[in-house]
Length: 388
Ligand SMILES: Cc1ncc(COP(=O)(O)O)c(C=O)c1O
Image (cartoon, rainbow, N blue to C red; front, side, top):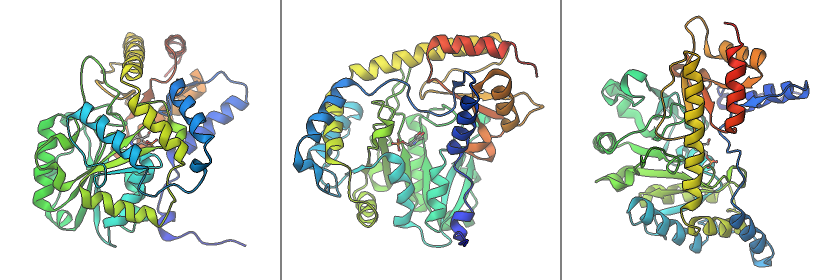
């Protein structure tokens, strides 16, 4: 028997990273030595003190029961203290913070709280795919804001037609940016807040990469800017900051009404985060900043090795100040999928075709800094021998 998929599901493309993973598994099953620069998943383990705390907390039967759906008070308090230290912004732990089962979960569910059929989300393109997926699954429509190199990969708000703005409820922004590696300054954030207030649009600011930055650069939070609390909900993740992608823990914070609307959606969908993971997350936040500094210095060294190697091949790749991604132009005669396929075929290297992040990602590939320097040197050697 076959059942017809809902129109919403039919309209979603296959999730890009699953497709890449399939191609990679197939190549590995054929016995090929694959260098994986594809998915942005840290190769380093979660710091041991966090694992020790998970183990300890998992022994306590009190942590085996359903968790509170608003997140444990101790976790919300430690997020608030961490946030003050990092951004010098005070968040109310009871009303302005909501722990999540990974930030993707919250980002994808958020449109359910505010979109009615026919409402628009303003979505940067290229982008992290759940901005579009979450909007469509909530019955909304997507308006693409192109991120072009000529504008520093920032959206140009002036280009959004009035007719769309009247129906727009949400705008997604993500700086430091996946996949382009671009960063945004406080001036841009202020402009975005003024624009959002004028047009009564909610800003979803995705800060998954807030702690991954180089050369002394410190990514700001939008909540540092005046007026942000009226319109901004921000999403944070433990995944990249603490090498905890598989653990599934993050948080939303910002405007109280936006946070509580998301909590209401989630109370109808999930039953909270495993309490032992929440307590391990507390230990992560309270563990100081040493791990983060080590992590940034590791990625910075890798970034420099890979960029030097690629530039020696004549690729002209620019150096991101944040994130662990290089956003690289492909030669004119290829599209991004063909180029990625060719690199996999000739060099056994996995990269992500830019078009998987949206149509304005066409013409680029993304490389993640998630392998050792030695493997990067090996990758450069292999690329040198490719013919195109
Ligand atoms: C821009 C961006 N936001 C959010 C996430 C999701 O993070 P999490 O693991 O917390 O769901 C990712 C993961 O790659 C990302 O690139």
